[in-house]
Length: 110
Length: 113
Image (spheres, chains in turn purple, red):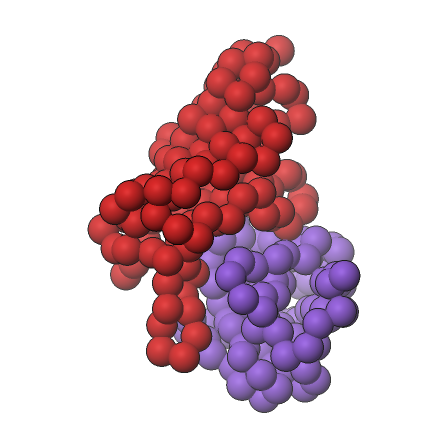
């Protein structure tokens, strides 16, 4: 069966510091991978998606970037965090209809 | 941009009551998905609908894919405390060589003690 992992689970970072969030998927090959952000009490905002290694599409221009160095690894990064980057970051995968989500990373920028 | 109108935004109900929420759009979708998200966790897929008019159940949950392909509803019968959470609809449609998933803003379900 397929599983999706995210780490860390929670993170507190100062403004201006770098960020690296990691997502890995097991039990499937060549999945589509997604990064979402969810502000408190709000819906899901698609940030990036990837259909293959090295292929990244950005949905929202911002100071975040994504990379896919391996088939089942998806990384969300920032060189300098802003206060507005605080939120709940969710990674998801899909191979056909539907998306399946990881447990999420709670990021607080102070 | 494309969006789904999900309503209601929140619901306060008594335990044992039935719940109904829906999503509408001006666009046609090939698939409708319903998710539930509990605090601090990622959304979990509850029901997937693939065909216009399809009615699918998952325990006390029932969802339907609207005939026009522009809407869907989710019903929860005889609600219990563990039903609390935020329910999201999502519509899937082809885009280029991939597909596009559009999300509703969510319905927060709160059960009054």
